[in-house]
Image (cartoon, rainbow, N blue to C red; front, side, top):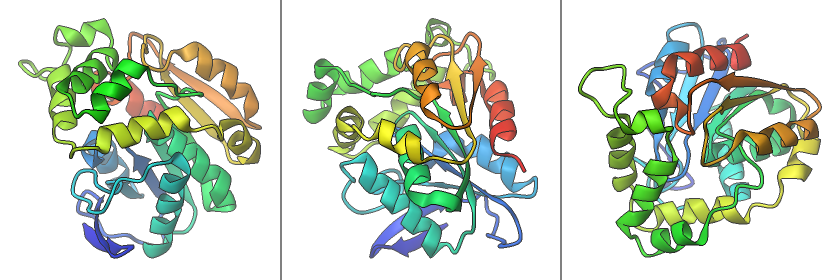
Length: 264
């Protein structure tokens, strides 16, 4: 559905379902250069099993208008404001990659409004290499290529899609190619400059689940495991044989982990 939020058109995927205040709510936050489409499978499942399920396009992503937000803190504030506009109660939130940092910060700032979080492809600090940042700033296709290659396990580079004839990496590449100029750089730079992880983790009181791919080359699991100690309540769901792009590489395992993390 499309709404007007902060005087800008904002798209929120709901799988065609209305929002019922009597239902529990889950929200899915996409990563750098992406949009709501990465969460379609999961929004459909939750929305058909007793939940309000939403996946918004952040500003200037997908079908949402406005300028791209340039910090994780600003994205988190935007997300919490969206919950207000949609008149949502407590929300379980899942975020992937950049979206995991937004989810972390939103849980810290939102207090009891956030009942549980799942951080997928999480790492902190989420430093981004200079070659990737420079390519993204120049709107060079090399940025898309680097994110596609490093964003998936080697097996996904040679096929690996559950539907014969489809390519996991080509799906990722086409989504990144659809990003408007400046978006990928704004997102990557927001990740690179975010320094509030420890302070945010200290404020999070809801249950936290880290959903990680054991072959993630973009946010290696060792950093996430070390950071897990910062949370009051944290569990880890490890997906074997999986890279950073777990929603495409291992959708069934990712789905089970999300149900466990956010289900009520």
